[in-house]
Image (cartoon, rainbow, N blue to C red; front, side, top):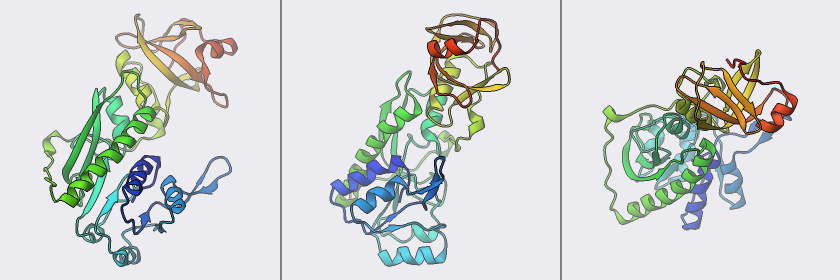
Length: 302
């Protein structure tokens, strides 16, 4: 069970390992793009290319959907960013249980946006945890954990791609332990848990009263979606490619603007913005942006 690009790597891994896949469950096709054309999820496209039956119930908890899954009689269900909570009636079907691939070192960052939240919170290390699912939100017993370092300027999109590969590797190792009978589930410590809720567009607004490092972490943790933004003379101004540089000033004030970037003061330092975008325009480098837009020292970003 899985839906977005993040789940494709694990499905590829299962296919490459010769696992007998009796079916793939994924979210229904959704309208996408300017033309709102109905588009299949990435997992569905891969499954169909390999001739695997695809199931797309609107609600997995519906009795008809549960009965359909019971007919397939899977030994094990692998879940990667499926997008629906599995009811107990589904968790009880496979004899080896339902194993989830979660993009954090649980119990940190349970929930829908662990990759974004790890960067926003300034974490230096994150990873993948496979987990024996229960009825809670990412609260099941941990099976295999693998970690990796987060680069100082790495974006959520870049980290997503690396974790997808690590997720495939971790799931295959977990599967081997299932076959060998060597799994040793470890209970999560709820006292050490944290939550990573789904990102919303409004989460992208920059708070210039934060430190320069916190603003930098937020910008890269929100890239590519929902993206970071501020306001310039009332207009939304999207920002990307930041770095922390020396300097000082009143929070939200432009302290320098040149081809090297637009420097904006935070509460305890300055970030240099390397790319900017106004509504209806393309994202431009600071040098190209400043050729067509007046953004000068002393202006306030809100």
